[in-house]
Image (cartoon, rainbow, N blue to C red; front, top):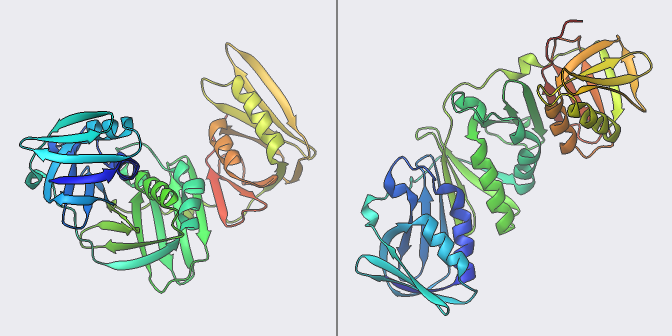
Length: 367
């Protein structure tokens, strides 16, 4: 194998692969990057068996060949070289990488040991990139990081003639995005949240406006295709929680507040509840008050100005970090909290993002 590439092109391709190179591989070969050089092209690929990325690199090929090299070292040495031509050449059991400023040699392994990429053939979907951007912005932060509950680490997508519904939950909060994307297909799937984050990142780097992907129900895999990058991932197998059942259909209290003022008061309350992150919301006919209490740091009370409250009065307790996550996501200057007592889930909606619903479970308190 021998090829000449531009450092900036090779580095960009390695950037697409960075999350697909596992730090703790289940097989030693998975810490390597696969290089496949043919007469006309160079392809580099990485996978952890559940998620994989393959990218094309513009190149001048002088000799064909396939091999694998340590991914971390390859990425670091390419990043360290300045922009310009880099010669990559196989010499017996090592790969020489030669720049104008120096030469590096990496050990190689045969490509025959590297797991093949799947060929996913199945139902095809097309999404505007704005949909993936919105999924990252509004939904992914509500998914779980707990590997013992794999279904909750994924994003649920439901396609129907009425549109696309996207949901994410960690059991304490729920984000639901309704997108008027008409499709004849009726299907649902659960894609790992970290995969969708990577798809969005790569789409942003490539500046594509539309994404196409195929779903193989038989292989339980999804396959994304861009101009020069391909991504595959294993779907999460399991039944997604019936999230619609926990969204209240009616409410006893509705509170409309200024996003900025509510956010400021919650941040102040969080100073005094760092151990638990719990804040209390007291709502009367005329005002919304935020309070927090610490056994060691003191306490805080503050009124959220410009609040409009209708319905029953009372109090409810939330994890302030969950509420702040929501407030930092929305763009609207005001939002409405819809409550049904202090023990039922609270529904949050902003005035300018009505297709986005956020639900937070309250903490039980002794009133």
